[in-house]
Amino acid sequence: MFKKILIADRGEIALRVIRACQELGVATVAVHSQADARSLHVLFADEDVCIGPPQGEASYRNVANIISAALLTNADAIHPGYGPLAENAEFADLCAACGLTFIGPPAGAIRRMGDKALARRTMQEAGVPVIPGSEGEVRTLDEARQWAAQLGFPVRLKASAGGGGRGMRVVRGMDELADAWNMARLEARNAFTSDAVYMERSVERARHIEIQVLGDAHGNLVHLGERECSIQRRHQKLIEESPSPAVDAAFRARLGAAAVAGARSVDYHSVGTIEFLVDQDGAFYFMEMNTRIQVEHPVTELVTGIDLVKAQIRVAAGAPLGLEQSDVSVSGHAIECRVNAEDATRNFMPSCGRVTALHLPGGPGIRIETHLYQDYAVPPYYDSLLVKAIAYGHDRQESLARMRRLLNELTIEGMATTIPFHRAMLQQPAFIAGDFDNEFVARTPLEIR
Image (tube, rainbow, N blue to C red; front, side, top):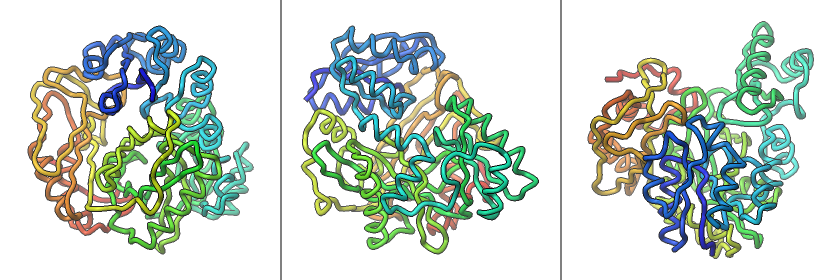
């Protein structure tokens, strides 16, 4: 086991990794920007190092400063959280060159899955269904027109170098293609420094279902069931749950087998997530692989009883998984609401400010993960996630009831948050019935108060 781990991220995920390290008896180093000097992850780590000014480019994405901090504090490993360095193959290579263990998958797997067009081809070769689309990058507008005519509208332009909805445009007719092509490439270049895009047929009113995988360096690889991630806005997830109300045991086995085959094809070891679109007829298609721990990992932990962060650290240290597929079972139901500093009544406009009042709920089946505290100043420089509110119950009905209780008690004052959105969503009859897809938020009017 490692002696000391530097956590190259901030917020609640940095706290989550620190807590896992404490349980494993591993010392921790927090890095922070000047804006985060009073953050909880700094307080609870054994050591801390300031790595730059508030802007993320100068601090949390400053590779030289982070590596220097690790070497200065004699850390033997770096955990990248789920931040900007978690899926950076060059950073993983640099860690190895400096004698540091990167707590994540091999750099080769990150590269192969990070190029979305290459990831498609890799999954096809592994026998995993993929959405019909271009064979690699679409390099010119004329080529885009040819592919659109061949695939049939609607089509979707997607950034080759990244995900999360950035650099993505749905095109419903040839007259929209030129503008969408230019906007997708511009957004991709701004987000990922590469304007490469590819094209897929757009699968309408589909569910977004992802499979958690976990593997070690000894060839052991399992899946831990699915997460339902269809409640999203602008391709960003808002609510996740496990198991999905649309997945039975037989379908779970099929999705899991495909995910394991895909991960095994790139010699994957660490935690990772393979994301699928499931159409209205029940056919599923590979979307992308996230080669890191996910924001929504707690729902999987609750229904399987497996601590994913500790497992990730152990396998990075060379330990065998100690787990076979037959050992994995899903029990109960968990749901997570991402409480963001955003105003849902104003198209989820970002918000920031000082926390003037804070109450974090408890009680049976409740798990709260947050870096907030009374009088904490929410900075404008980073991701808007404030709280991961998680409820667990014997079944979906009980977990929803507990989540409603949680949201009614949860108090964050000083800025706009998405708490009212979540309260309204959990009252929607279609959501309660499990009858929704990834366009549900966009087409469903909510009475948000």
